[in-house]
Image 1 (tube, rainbow, N blue to C red):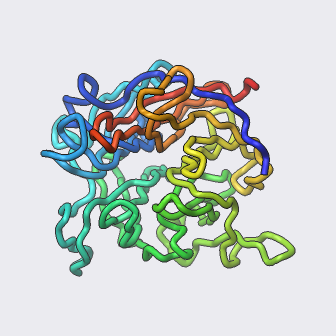
Image 2: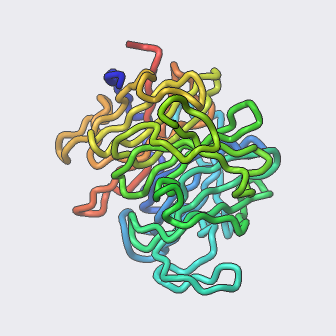
Length: 341
């Protein structure tokens, strides 16, 4: 495996929290995976969200959506609205926290929360992949929701996978257009205890489960439509596969085992992840030993590339949660130049 380079990011701004997202009823939140909608505005999808600056209390919902100005990314993403009602960022997937969820007329087990993993825009539609969970790390199933109004409203498509699909490695997912008619997806489990597997699907058949193929090694060669082989061993969490504005491919990943966020620079979606250039852009730290200007963040996770980024100006949405005090619990924006060494 290629040894990681240390190319540390610096903080641009806080993206959520008091004085920033109060108007949307967002005090504490995390994640914030972001893509461009068909109309050009940015759509950011967040996870567990609360009215107060922290975790718990009134206004618990997930996922929620904020809209952003793409021109503001270089200096700090500016929010322009939310998926309502009104200015209030409402829960865009229908279910009751800690309740019995009704899905397509059937009653399912207790659902604690529904968490977004990634969004993709295909033509005039947007698709949101989510994990339906009972407590963190315990996934009941995953499913896809669709928006036909630029991310303002979302409806279930009826497409879902059981939690043990691909031996449990199809829970936390990131996807991107390959430019060859396929969407490529890296995925792992939600337990931050597993490596990555690779799948693909024709971009016009995302909702056809039978059209999904996995990338596998038979002892001699790699090919599609084989049982999946782990493409990168380790203990990974949140993922961000993106083709940047300059055409470069990157895969951002939270590395639980090494307490850091790495960005791998790829030659395409089907790349040797062991040989790819790997840059550690953020390092985990203890509380009291942080330096956001030097890439040290306590209890960090996430790391989603923002649209408009290039290798020379890569912007990432990074989450932070002080699990001892429940604040900070927020999303932040960092930038890094991966052309420097």
